Amino acid sequence: MQEVILQTKKIIKRYRKFCALEQADMTVYKGDIYGLIGRNGAGKTTMMKIITGLTNPTDGEYSIFGKSGVSAGSEKRRIGCLIENPAFFGGLTAYQNLKYYCYQKGITDMKQIDNVLALVNLSDVKNKKFRKFSLGMKQRLGIAFALLDNPDFVVLDEPINGLDPIGISELRETFHKLNKENNITFMISSHILSELYAVANRFLFIDKGKILKEVTKQELDLECSRCLVVRTNDTKKTAMLIESELGIEDYKVINNEEVRIYNESAKPDVINKMLICENVGISGIYESGVSLEDYFKQLIGEED
Amino acid sequence: MINMMRADLYRMSKSKGILFFWLFTALIYFISIAFKAWGGISLAEMPEFPENTKTDIGQIAMNFTFYFLLIIPVFCVITSEFSEHTLKNTISSSVSKRQYFTSKFLFSLTYSTVSFALANYIYYAANRLVNGSEYSSALKDFTKAFFTQFPLFIAIVSIFTMLAFLLRKGALYNAVTISAPIVCTMIAQVLMSINSEKEFLKKIRDFGEKLLSYGVETMSARIIYDPSNDYRNNCYIICIVVTILSFALGYFSFSKRELD
Image 1 (cartoon, rainbow over the protein chains, first blue to last red):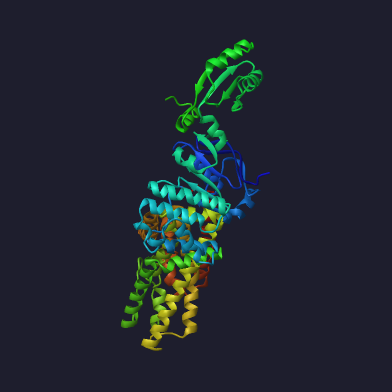
Image 2: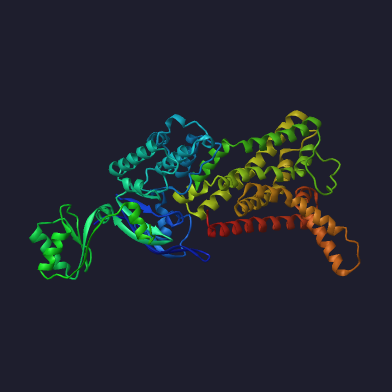
C-alpha cells in the first residue's frame, strides 16, 4: 500500500460570501508528482496555502505525513514551498537570502546553499542582489529555497512562470531527477496543461473551487486518446464479441452504456454489423479523442 | 525560535537602517560630549533639572530621542517582511503564525532594548573618558537612572512591534509611530488651554494635564527627576499594562489574520 503524504477531506474555504474551495478532497502519495490543473482563480493557490498553513480552512480537515491538526505543524520542516511569487529580501544577494533561511531552518551545513543554487543554475549569480534578478531568476531562486532543507514534499505554485523554454525543460529534468533519485514528492500547480502533463504522473482538475476529477497519467492518456465509442444496452456482450469475434483486446468498458475501443484498425461499420447480427442494441458508434485542452474544457463544461 | 532569532540577527547585520540608527546616535552623543551639554527632541515643556545635574544623567533624561530612533529596528525586523512578502516563506515551511509572532516580538524587543542600553553605556564610557568625573556621574548612579527609565522603552518597543504587525505597511507604520506623540501632545495642550469654570470642561482640562504628564516625552524625563513615588509607580503600571496588552493584541490578531 502506498504511503499517503497528503490527504484532504471536505476542505471548504470561504472569504466572506465567496467560496474559494468547496468540499475539496485529494490524496497525494509518496513519490507522486501531483499536478494541480485549473484556470486562474480556480482555487489552486488557496489549496496550497491551506496545506502549508498560510491560511486556515473554513471547514474540513487535512493530514500531512499522517498527522493532522496542530501536530501537522511539527512536519513543516519536511515541506518545501514556493507559493505565488517568489519573495526574498531585495537588498540581499541570492546567497545571503538563502543563508538567512538556513539559519532560520537550523541548517548548519552552508554547502547546501551552493548545492541548491547549482541545481537551479544560479551559481554564477549567487552574489547578485535579488532586486536585480530577472523574473525567471527569481522563480529559480524560489525553487532553490523550496529545496533548501532536503524536503520530503515540495509544493510549487506555478513554478514555470517567467521561465524561458530551455529553463522550463531543465527544471522538468530537475523535478524528475529529484523525484526518482531523492524520492521527493511534488505538488505542482499550473494553468499550462502541456507543461504539467510533461512532468506530473497524477492530476487534479479544479475549477471555481470545485474538484472536477483526480486521474493518473495513464487514465488521462486513455481518456484523451483517439478511440471508437460504442454506445450499447449490453456492454458485457459487446465486450465479449469484440474480443472473441474481432480479436480486439485494446478496449475499455466505461460504464453500463459505453465501451471504448482503442485499437486503430477497428472499423465502425464492421462492429456495427456484427453487433446487429448478434442482437445487441446499439444507440451509436462514433470516433472520439480530445487534446488535453479540449479535455479540460469538457471537464469544466465550456463549449469550444 | 532560537533559529529564527539567529536568522534575524544575521539579516540585521546586513541592514542599512541599523547603520542609520547608530550614526544618528553617535552624532547626538558626539555633540553632547564635545559641548559638555545634554539635549534631544522635546515636544512639551521639560521638567526643571536640579542644578547639580551631571551631563550623562541629563542626557538620559533626554532619551525621548530614542523613541524616534527605536522605530528603525522594529521597521527593519518586521515591516520589511510584510513589504517583501517574505514572511510566507517562513510560515509555510518553518514555524506557525503564533511562533512567528512570538519570535519576532521577542527579537525586536531584545534587539532594540540591547541597542538602546549599549548606546547609553557607550555614551557613558566615552563621556567619562573625555570629560572626566566633573561631567559624569558614578556608574552606580548612571545605572540607577538608566534602569529607572528602562521599562518605559520596553513598553515603547512593544507598542511599535504590535503596530508593525497590525499596520504591516512600512509607510503607515512610520506615519503612525512618528506622529503619535506629536498628536498626543497637541491634543493635551489644546485641552489644557480650555478656560472655563464648568465642571465638565474642568474635567476635560484635567484629562489634558494627565495626558501630558503621562506622555512618552514627559515620562522619559520626569521618571528620573520626580521625587514622588506615586508618579513613578503610575508610570511603571502603565508600562507593564502597555507591554502585556501590546503582546496579547498583536498575538491574537496576527494568529487569526489571513496572509496574502
